[in-house]
Image 1 (cartoon, rainbow, N blue to C red):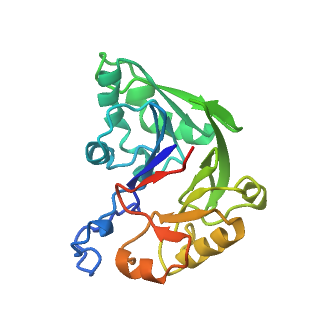
Image 2 (spheres, one colour):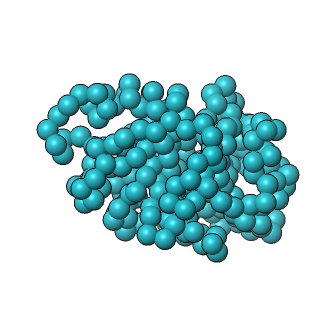
Length: 254
């Protein structure tokens, strides 16, 4: 299984508009962070997690030529508003694309994007998508996918486990019953928003505590704001922990 970090930034992205901080002005490409999303590749199948606002740029940079399914973590704008870019993949594939998520997330998508899911336009005018509500583990393209409920402030959302890899972003707490779903991981990509506390996201210190409790073989921090300079923070992290960067490719070995 191959994981590509398409974007590891927050809702503002990095650099932020009109910000003159050292990270936003940095020439280090590892400090350029598009909105958070990953691509999971198993054999010849590509599964996209979230349609980030920057999906077009991510697909071009990553050389993505087909999307076989989409998993949604939650319905916030930076994780969904690239949905129209799926239309290009419909054209390339001449087929619909299945989209998976919680019943609550898919309801918001149907409400927010009625031109896709309700209104009938001419073929090619809107993406051709099907929705599939999930609450339990399911099989997709030879992978066992486990929805992992986490709390994003007071909003329950999904992270996902794919075999022995897990992706957990935009969360403030992992409930105990969900912690039990995240043992024995080879790789975990987990949010670490910033140093200062936030009501609906974890700090890097809190993320490190979760990593220490779950003990994945490799932990990679994502969904980072502009407070983290890649080279500086990498020197401070303990073994087995690292920062993501856009375009990073992770081979889980299976």
